[in-house]
Image (tube, rainbow, N blue to C red; front, top):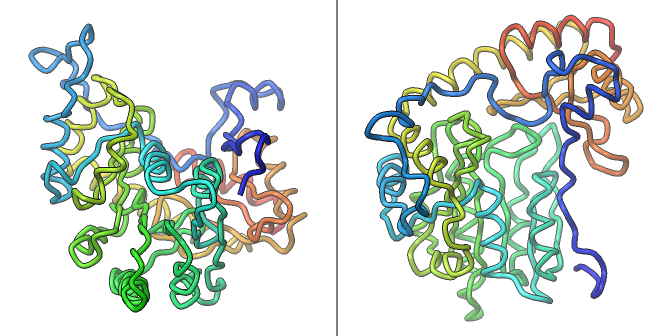
Length: 369
């Protein structure tokens, strides 16, 4: 819980490409972002911004985002009153925290995971209970029993599925088991079950979703985004998806027109072209397989991944820091983890284009793992 009067916790954004180019004396165009989990190639949606589809930029977006919601209805199989368009998945996370957390609330987080869950929880004055995932030998799986036990005193439970930064995923059956345990425990003593948020930013990479579980566990909120498989990170469009009675408090906190007209148009067009996202996932999956194979052949230790990034363990935290600095000096930006982090001896690398991955592999030849 944040201390009264203390600055609110904020997300530590990655250094900009321009900053890194200046720091390491490199041309800006030589910098490759292996740290931000974005796709190297955007989809070709130029036609949506021309001719009869050109959005009216002089007016605010329609309050119901009807076209975007209709596209999401087809993509996610959720009704209009179950869909809330947001300015990226991060706004969905923030709004959900605002809706269900207050000063003195408790939020449960399965760690290691995306840092924003802790930040938005602590910004609401909530205490965060970190429940460690199982170890690498168990595929960084959720500790279901420990999560269910921690949820007894919680108002909100955060789950990233597939998980960032480990790249691991759970079966829908295991998520269903967790939800059933939480529901049964709450019913046993007449409590209201906590809201469980499942962040599915990388769901398209595994081709499945926990969305159908919202009928068995009505307090489920699923978060989706167009930043990853749809390659529209700069557009900033996401969704909170939940049963109407659970979504209503979240809706009440959204600012008017938080998704721009252009973003809504691009996102709607992308959702209507699932083949483009599927082709992007296929390209990334092919490169991910090749990157894992070639880095392992050099003596690096990549973990299995189902996402668009790879987690790599080094012999020590200092070895990981040294490798990260060497990559940076060559214009390749890894995701590093600070001292004290459970993954301090790891780097996370985004899967990029074949040519960019070639550069990474060549530099890796000279780095000891």
